[in-house]
Image (cartoon, rainbow, N blue to C red; front, side, top):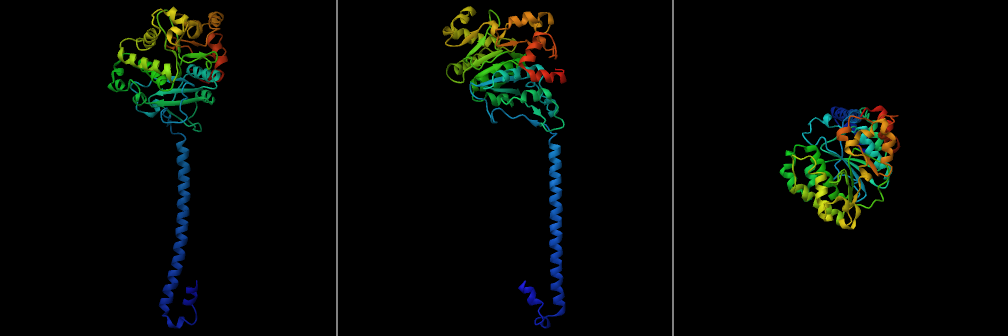
Length: 380
């Protein structure tokens, strides 16, 4: 400022050439114009940037996001205080297109998950999807999944994905999984599921449940380390519990080693119920199921429940869940059960029907009310 006054003082002007004064004045005006133009351009650029970001964010809400990896994301499963479900149908030949790997659950699967969350509020419920799985954000215009919203309304439910080879890292079966023998199986989806439930219980302990069950009451106070018989010859693997440390962890390790050593890709149940049965027989020192049921101390604390606990309605009677004439009979058979297993492999064509007078309809109405209500909008 003082320099400008000096330059234009009356005393100084006579000593300066007129063209120099004009040049200085021109520079001053040009500078003002440049500053104004710069500020205007920056302002316009910032406005455009903010508009563009807002537009991208708006578009971004309609872009599917991958589910978070169970090994990398908090919260992680609580050891010994988590119920696990597995979805493995996309583990074999997953399609590369994102839209073909979107998160999907049937109403019956959601009922299993909700019933676990409802009756076991102090347990975490983790649903693990094997393979890449994507979902739309809740605020997306594409998010129209009342079934998913029904289960996520429970604070103890978490949806995660896993990578099989990474998930097996650090377990006794890590190298065997890398060799790829598992994928030569005639029943790869089932055998991957059989393996993943064992890896999961080896890692975290807790409870594994098939996705075609409905819990009828709490299992929070049932001591860990148990399974249930499905028949007079086999301990089933649709309900499994193992403690995260001690005996339970060693039991899980023994199951993984048996899975690897006895693996038979041509036999449907050999690597599932077969594994649990063989390991239980070795631990209990008998092949007699009656002795396993009667004497828990014989099995070093491993509890083998009789069929009424989890499989009161047998595989051959699966229609009793879905036909009205068997309603009262089926409810009576399962009145002391912890859960019912509805044998999805043969019963999957039957959906939840709101208002249905069937045993399954009554189980759903009482034990998974939100999925039951959402089923009115979903035909699965």
